[in-house]
Image (cartoon, rainbow, N blue to C red):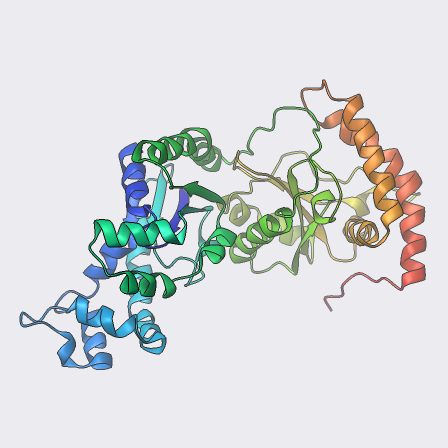
Amino acid sequence: MLKIGLTGGIASGKSLVAQRFRELGAVLVDADVIAREVVEPGTEGLRRIVDAFGPDILDRGGRLDRARLGGIVFADPARREVLNGIVHPLVRARAAELLSSADPRGIVVQDIPLLVETGQGSNFHLVVVVDAPEELRVERMTGQRGMAEAEARSRIAAQATREERLAAADVVLDNTGSREEIVARVDRLWTERLLPFAANLADGTRAERPGSARLLPPDPAWPAIAERLAARIRKAAPELLAVDHIGSTAVPGLPAKDVIDLQLTVDSLATADGLAPALADAGFPAVPGAWRDTAKPGSEDPDLWQKRFHANADPGQAVNVHLRVAGSPGWRYALLFRDWLRCDAEARADYAMEKEQLSAQFADDAGTARYAEAKEPWFTGQALPRMEAWAASSGWQPPSYS
């Protein structure tokens, strides 16, 4: 199933978005609702809260006095951490129970107000953040909820910053406009990205990538995207020795296709094959037949260049995942090529010129195969001797995992 983590600051409009996802057919797992369930009278959660905060935290009916508890924890970060340490594990456990009963081909949206604060982003195929600036959120809380401004700002300050949430987001839904506008954004996301993502995930197939090799200007967001993807992969496959951002999007200042390349370092191809189901579940199914690097300089045994190749099921962000054995020629080449381009401005400019010429030459192609094949002579004839010379002069060495 496709797992979506939904979050947003207080008064951002997250509840409206969650409700729309439910109407469109998602299974909605609401952390706020669960958080209430796990502290109902007679539960282990309520007993532990009373132990931590005292019996005065209960109302006359023996239920949790939420207003009193809120006044305590929003004024004292240490006490808030105590409460979170009690409630959050119980919420996650209950959410896991609900997930286990969901349709394997469906879409599950987990509404988690403190997703960023609790570091849960790597648990999901995508993190969706509902966003609105602080002043608008304060206006909503004071105008629609009757909250005092000081209390509204205190509630905002107790959560992750807007910048922290945006950094964790795969998708940002702007909610500064009307209800109709945010609903339309959710509908487009559902139709154009989430439904095909869920279908690809269930079928174990990569997302389609129509179009030619169109180069984009360098995007400073590429490294952050790569790190979010790498975190999900590390979570799914802890046996990996390393996950590295490689390729053109890993080189600052270099034009590139909007494709994130990740190199997953393994101790053997047998390990790589064993990880295939976990990577597929995480959204990166294997691509049949793509088992060898095309760049094979010199007379080295072609079998030394074997790898395993996966790609993402998400149509919203193209990702190539290369599984290579530590110490193999292809593994070393990918890391050296990246580091050489990062350090050598002339090499970077030469490669950018080569890419731009070939991109223009194959601009009318329906795919990128001929563009990729045409780059191979530059990799072997130009890049290889120059980057080896750079490695020798700079003392560059690949990582060691012994």
